[in-house]
Image (cartoon, rainbow, N blue to C red):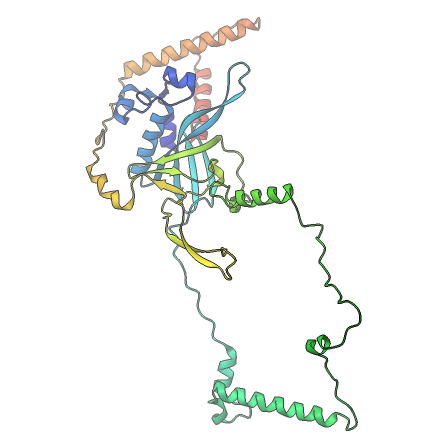
Length: 389
């Protein structure tokens, strides 16, 4: 798969004027078919992402195209600005991987989806040793006591408790008087002189918040429980991700369906389980009008990813016809064309080096037909190609 990423990146990038100026993907010319992109041999980042996603799905990968935003430096005093961007995502064994076609980089995130390959293993039940001992042999080694049931064991325990109480009664002195207990009713019936004592009022603790602090605390609690709040399980020391170049993720799609993100906007603070359904769940509601007890109300669980086609609309997939079902790839270039392109690249590189060194006040002299230099540069390029894979 990394070789496919390198091959897709080798195709030239071309941005429409409106997309480069406004940072928004245009509706008309923003998305092109894969066949048109391959025939043209250059296209936008979204064209590269669609092609890479198609290739990964052909390799039996669970691949998707993601659309979101990234921050780019603005012109002049604008500072940073958000620009729409498209990349590729794959899921495998609880790992989510982002494939960036512009920089040939891959970002791996752990625990962002459910594991599907691992099967649930049932734990064997441990047999109690107590039952084995009682079943094999009784207290005195008699086989009849070994078959004693739980009811007979309880009767034996109760008899032992009665005997212990009788022994404690014999130890008690004959002239000793038992302790007398004063109940709450006896205390209430006592006569009072003067006015009745007022009950003590509990003072407000220092930790109890009032007014604005209580309102801020309630707003913070409701914000943490909202759907758009970051997933707390992904904010730990081992799961926190701060090195993603993306600022938000909005839509994820492939050849089967399209899902809209209804969680937090940051790609590192959410999970990618598209099979989450909005089933009904019961929750307790506080009573109204001074009634006692709590009421149980059925609420519908909100989806984390809202699909475009619901379960009852999946039959519509058969009616949708792909734009280019069979994509044809051009044959390899002729050796003469490859040689002319190589010469043009060499001339362009030499001109750029001469221009850069002339600004520094240094002359450039080229060795004509130097085989040692060509071998050294070829080995250097081979190392870079292997590093990129």
